[in-house]
Image (cartoon, rainbow, N blue to C red; front, side, top):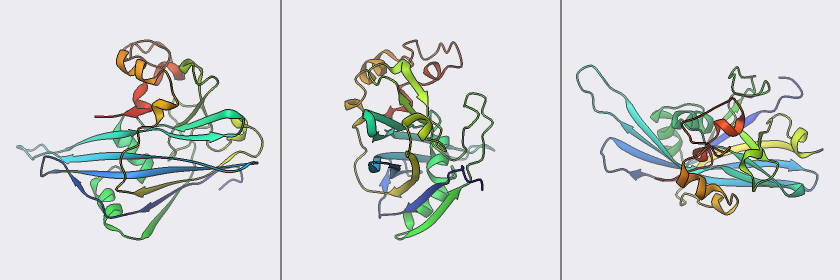
Length: 234
């Protein structure tokens, strides 16, 4: 592994928690994602509690499958200089599961929930991704990290390289680790206090460039990101 490559560590520890949905085939899994960032002013952390609901489909004829939904919000980390970094949700809950747990199956969620100890440690090799929508330094296994040049103006959103936070936030700033732990805590709903435009954009269903969600006009980040990357509540 190269010296400049960072390792995303997912620590999956479970507290006893089970929330049954209305269906006997569904179950909800609540977890806390914590981001730790080293700075010259000391360690900075941020966390958010999210929920994945995994509902198995009944087998009809030769078909089977599952329906996955998510609730929660992006993780916000306050950094020196008044800047904030956000670790986003994904529009596809399966990708959110992969980012948090390293897999998108119900089995991995059941395993995390059943284990009462800090038992699973999964380092993610920061291999360079090939997603054409992402920058050339995009790393697999990391959530998307972003910040704003002006947090009051959502169109100023910019991608953050998880392997080189110092390029965006200055000398000495680097990602320490990202951890995931199962929890019984309530889903956090704090991000609206940080993003004054969020509720208005949710109501109007527009992307961060203030255009309708259905009319992505370019490959610019503000065109591609909607409010669901920052908060999803059912």
